[in-house]
Image (tube, rainbow, N blue to C red; front, side, top):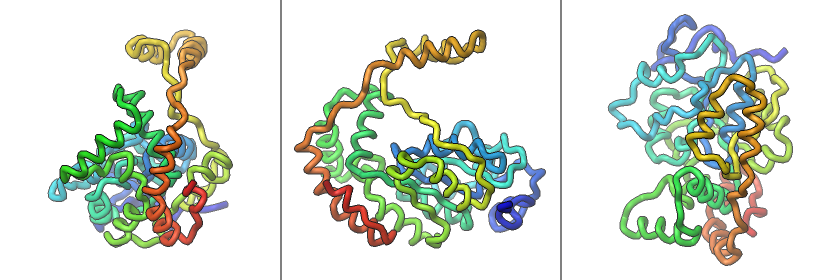
Length: 297
């Protein structure tokens, strides 16, 4: 039987000291850093099915990189894990951590030994999925080309856009920030979105082995919808919360998702983005010792 990491089942790290499992101030032993629109939600849900792993149901803490350095506090952050029930591995998944420039140093300051899981995806496809996510969740009405132009205008005005369509796809730059902050490469597991989709069970097992827990046999659920519901948002939320005749209600809610959200990307825009990401993809390949040439088309 595969054993959990030595000592983790008994204690949790806290600012260089140790606290017992009876404490409510327990910090994560692993983080799913991102990237956004690369399957982080599905991976988190799959790992949460492992009895040796605890992930809060809220999934994302949105802490590092969004709090000032002087405000980083173990006690405050640990409140996000208040539902922990003594599972040996504790994690959370906030895709912004990979992209936000200040997150790496803050994470290393509070969690120097944490293990990190990253999922990378063809950055052109990731950017387009990001765009449709904003169309679905934020009511964006601009076309994709217009949205990219608006983002570029922000850059030209001297305003960084770390959470934008393009910067989030510069994975080598983001990973390098973590290594420069003091993390060792052995603390990172970088997965390919394509592998996650084509062979989800083996990729979930790979993460479980990386975390040092016995695989649960869980596969990857599909958590993020790519279709729009025909129901008004308030009605959908109300129906989803009903407990009576639950299976019938759930089938009705799922059946309402019939309007596809995505369209084929303009081939001219795609060709332009392929060139934008060519060098960043090559940099990622050098950093990880992998070939991402298939992304450059």
